[in-house]
Image 1 (tube, helix red, strand yellow):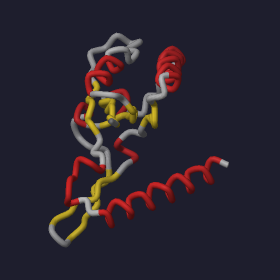
Image 2 (cartoon, rainbow, N blue to C red):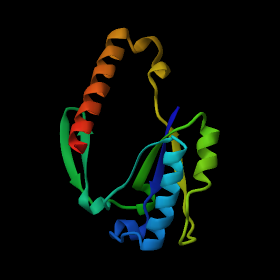
Image 3 (cartoon, rainbow, N blue to C red):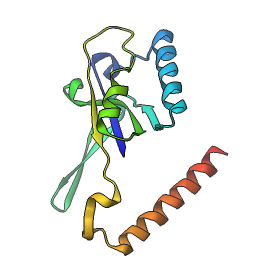
Image 4 (cartoon, rainbow, N blue to C red):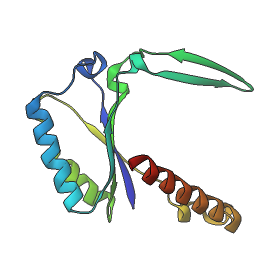
Length: 146
């Protein structure tokens, strides 16, 4: 299964404060452990919400709200996507996430939907379409890295 590990924002991340060398070093070591365990599929930090925007859908109308957004604790500062055997395995790994500043914090773990979760509604045609999209995305991603 895949799981998204959501790192919550706080007043510092929303102010654009970048991690110091100690934090970067500890997170780098942890990321190396995830890579060596074969479970890290992605992991990124996000700019503060002041650099972002939301598109609001109201029936057929669309409007744009530019950041910053209220309540930093309700916002996302970064994420990982891990491939794990179970949510319990992800929880055990999440307990090992470094907290070098020793502050109160939390991460959220959410399973990512897989094709089999959708049952018969996810028809063979839709499965083929998704497979083509994933293959094309991987091609473009490899090309961008070269």
